[in-house]
Length: 266
Image (tube, rainbow, N blue to C red; front, top):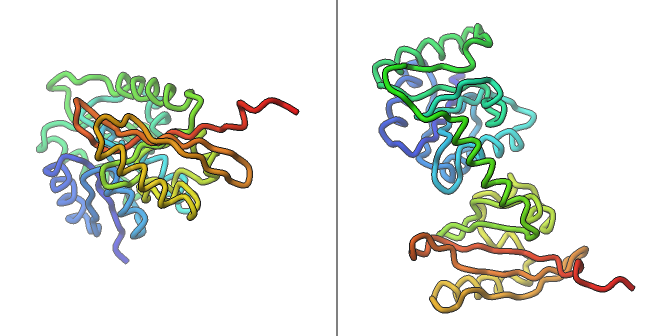
């Protein structure tokens, strides 16, 4: 039976380049051009080998890897992180939670490196020295460790704020959340990532949520809409606001606040 490979990268030409190498090695290749598409492919079909770019808009490579590790905890397969930046130590691979790392370089150089890398995977002869593959030293690159540090700093802010937070894309799909948000809705990250926004709330509140999304989207002067939700364990205030970058609306931000924390003890 042919092995299945998935390539996720927002660079169309690199996806085609890598897919061509994999197909020549006998893989059946699925392709995705961003993290959202990659998660959809991971849910649709089995995968034996995953190549994923680290830096992608909306759902980045680190999130995709985190999703993959949790979704396929009982079916672990090699994950290869790829980027135009260079990782210099195994500790950075561990932060990403990838098995291997390949730095992008000139196509003609990369083709040879990747081909040998796939041969070693097939023969199961990869060693610790193969965990990081630098395809060339012909031009300088920004250290991927710096990019990872920046990502971790932003994640730290996102996770430390005292609200459950959910980032919603313009197509109403959930593209990011924090741990507090997950605990408030009592769902796992892999269950809601790239799912419709209405999965966040009970059935009885879905119409109210959709109405709030429409209100802030249609009225530029309306900064937010809030309403309350009661669950078995929590009394939540849900705050819906539009997500803008340089005045362009690109989706929504949903914040959830536990109202019990403000109640006076009896």
